[in-house]
Length: 330
Image (tube, rainbow, N blue to C red; front, side, top):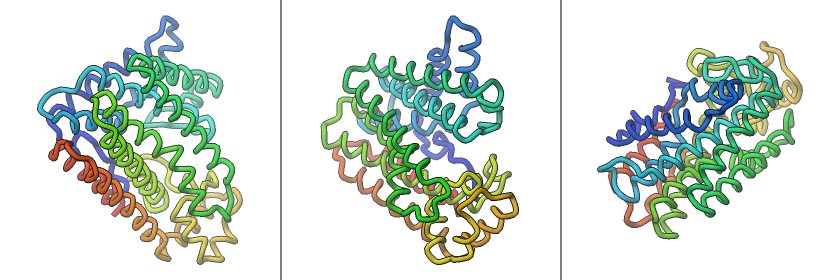
C-alpha cells in the first residue's frame, strides 16, 4: 500500500534494537531539558511527537554490524544515535518555517503553534545539543557532525534555488538530495562505525551504504508525494508540487509532456495540482523514478558487500530495510 511507514524496529528485526532505541528516546528527553521551562517545552515538542527514528537506528545497526547483535549497544553508540536524531529534528524545525507548515507528525508545527522566531531558535538549540554530544565522542565525530549540518544547509539552499523551475535537471535534483537527506543517513552509519573502532575500509563502506540508502529513501518519498493520498501519507499529498519543488518523477515527466510544462512553473491551486499529478502518473515517469531508487538500493547493497568482517545477520537486516523502502511505494 503506498505510503505505509517503514518501522525500523519491525523491518530490521534485531533483538537489542528496541531496547536501545528506548535508550535513545531517554537520551533525547534528557538532551532537550532546560532550566527555562518554555524553551524545554518547545524543544521537546517534536521529540514527544515520536517518529520512525531511522537515523538513530542506522547508527546502532552500524555498531551491531561491527561487533554483532548479541548484546546492547555501547553508551557511545547510543549517544551518537541521539546526536544524529537531534540534528534531524533541528532541521525539521527550520524546514517547517521555510515551508510555512501547519502540522508535523500529527501535531501542530512549532512555527504554527508559537512563531517562526521560536521555531528557528528552538531548532538552533537542538543543533547545539547535538554538537555537545558529538564533542563528547571526540573531535573527529564533532567535526563530522558539523560538516554534515553544513551539507544539510547546502542541499536545502540548492533546492530553494530551483523552486518552480521547469528546467531543473536530474543532476541538480541529486545534488540537492545528497545534501539535504543522504548526508545525514551517511553520517548516521559512519558514527556507528567510528565509535565501534572499525577500520577505514569498513568505515567508508558503511558511509556509502548510508548515503545510497538516503538517496533511495528520498526518491521513494518524492514518488509517494505524487502517487499517495492524504490518508496513506499522513500528510498533504502533492505538497512538493504546491511548493514548486519539482522532484525526480516530475523532472522525468517534464521531459516528455508539454501539457505539464504549460501547467506548472507557477503556484497552483488544488485542482491544478490534481491535474499535474494525473499527468505525472500516466506516462511512466513514476516507474522511471522507482528504477532510480532501485539503482540506489543496489549500490547500498554493494557497499555492504565491500566491507569485510561485518556481522552477516545485521547486514541481512539492513538489506531488508533497503528493500522495504522501495516496496512501500508499490
